[in-house]
Length: 87
Image (cartoon, rainbow, N blue to C red; front, side):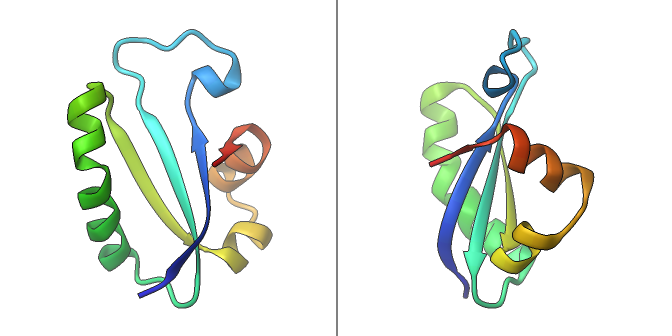
């Protein structure tokens, strides 16, 4: 299992937009070590489940290896690097 290195949140609100009723929260978990996406998603979904119930917000979780986060040129990662808030 990989270990947490950094987390970034990206929502309509972090982009300065008005959030609609169907807006979700994208949580990017930047992990060090070997990332096995399905295993990490399973762990992260369990970890965010209570928060979803309490807040009424849908949280979409995306695990990514730290090397990929820093170097990949995908549209999702470019947007999160530009607009996300590190927590």
